[in-house]
Length: 267
Image 1 (spheres, rainbow, N blue to C red):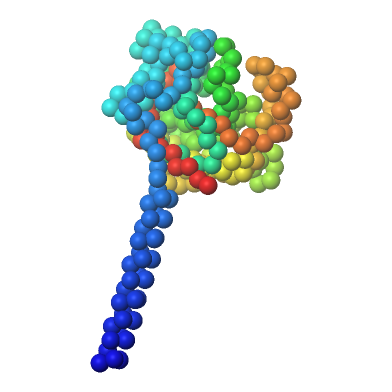
Image 2: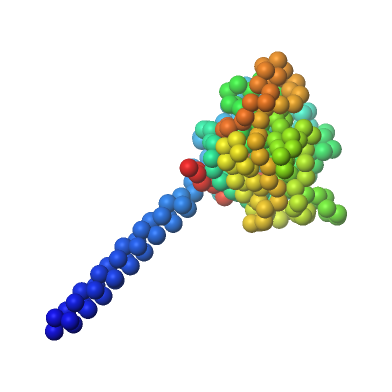
């Protein structure tokens, strides 16, 4: 009887420890997946608009709109005239170490006077300067741009590319100073939704993913390169690491939509 009781006690201990371990693992997994929806309010109250030629906070001609959980770049009030009014909408706080994901698609037609390079073109700007410091007539924020391109119907046109307004990065240990570099993604034609994810590790590694596949990786983001607005200020910062900043989405003359905009902050 004593032997049976000891065996039962041992089995109960094993079951207890197993359940505790399972509870702990579940808790850790839940913690790892605490993604935050940046558009949960279904309005723009958590976002800051800055459009060239307008004061910060002015949503010129209702460029940015939210409808049924979709953030739309809309030009219905533009009378088919863009006039280089490049715009950005910034989430209200900066980030440093995180994963960011969303779905995007290009719709409709580009405005008549939009730049040729801006057709089916938008972007996610990361490590952006503070929108409150953007100049009145400044085209783009100093940032790292994850360039979004839609296919033109035929041929290849990569998306999740890298552009560097006022910045540089390193690839394979080499400092890259060209403005834009293509990723390894395929083209996405028409108005299909595309899923993009970005992993940002402070001033260390940054990776781009399209539909779950890594298409670009680089490191050591830093200030550098020609800047037209307030050039002396930015020249004095050249070479300094770019550790954090705001996240913004672009308006560049072609209608585009964003949804499922989420972030997971990392330690």
